[in-house]
Each structure stands twice: as C-alpha cells, then as structure tokens.
Length: 112
Length: 114
Image (cartoon, rainbow over all chains, first blue to last red; front, top):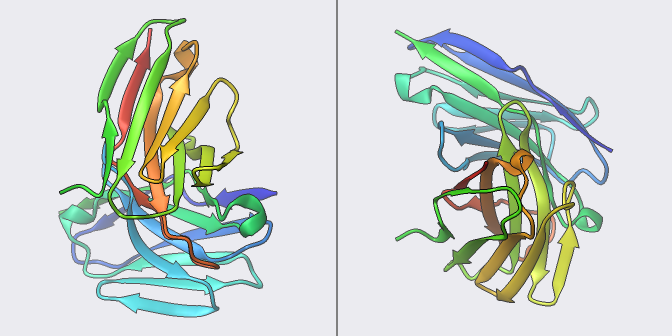
C-alpha cells in the first residue's frame, strides 16, 4: 500500500530554520524525493535520499530513516521566495513502474 | 527552451465533450507519466508509459485514456469530460534507470469542465 503523510501548513520567519517532516509506507520502497512547487507552477526537484542519513545541498538538507519510514526536509536561512508547497514523494519499485507516490504537500509561508 | 511542454495550458470545456491534452519532451527520456493535482489531494498518477509499446494504468485511470505516439509524445484523453475532472494536469518524464526515478514536470494544463 501507499501512504504518505506530511503537515498541511507551516509558517516560519525570514532567516530562520524550518523542518518539514514526512512519514511514508510504500511497497517496494526505492527512495524518497522532495519537490518544491510554487502556486500554479510545476514541481521542481530538490533532493533524493535512498540510504539512511543526511544529504546536504546548500540551504536545503534532507534526511531519511528507512527503518522508521521517516524523512525530513530542512530549510535554513529562510528567504521570502521559499514560500511554496513542499512535496514528499516515495518512489516505488519496478512492479509499480517506479511511480512516485506523493504526499498532499506542505504549504510553507515565510513571513518578514 | 522548455524540455517538457504541454498543450493547451488552459482549457475550458463542457460536460460530455472529448478533450485531448498533449505532452512533448526533448529530454530523450523513455518514461512518461500523467498526473492530476487537486487542492488538498496532492498529485495522483493517472497513466504511465515506459516506452511506445508499454502503457500502464495508475491510481486513478477511470475516465481517461492515453496514447504514446512516439518516444517524445504522450497524450491524455478524456472521452466524455465530467465536472469532477476539473483539475491541474501535469506530464512528467524520467530516464530509463534502475533504482532512480527523478521526474521532470511540464508546466501543467489547467482544465475546467463546466
């Protein structure tokens, strides 16, 4: 089965750090993606984790624990342009066409 | 230049009409996908294709059909549109790789069925 959970909304202040959590249950789990989506636009790739641990890429980091079915996206030094929806997606294996099973997204509002 | 393009970008139609949404890509990717996005429901997979001769149903294929005319083209059809098919539709592509499936999304088509 497929089940991806993440908070619906979060608010944080410019310059601060925010952590967006995601839990998943995916058959044939094959990795965890994070995408950013601004309103009315296409999702764009942020990060990918397949092994346990932290992946850092500039202001953005992503963590995965396969045994716990848990990931988080960490955004540092928040900027106003980071206001967007953040999508957690678990990748299924070949039997499911390597489909991405998306959570409903976390809408992040960055305030001055 | 956009790597994944969708036409039309916006479409308003009436219940019962046949609608085709088109997707083209210049990335040379084998895998193509169609998703719909609804407020509060996230992205849901409609159909996917690994190559021209390989078409598979996704989570919500009822009421939709697809055609993979070439490696670069993947069309989604609504044979008889209904209002609950009003949504934002995205096409996506990915490379033929084992164990890695980063998907690249087109700009989306906003469809309204009256």
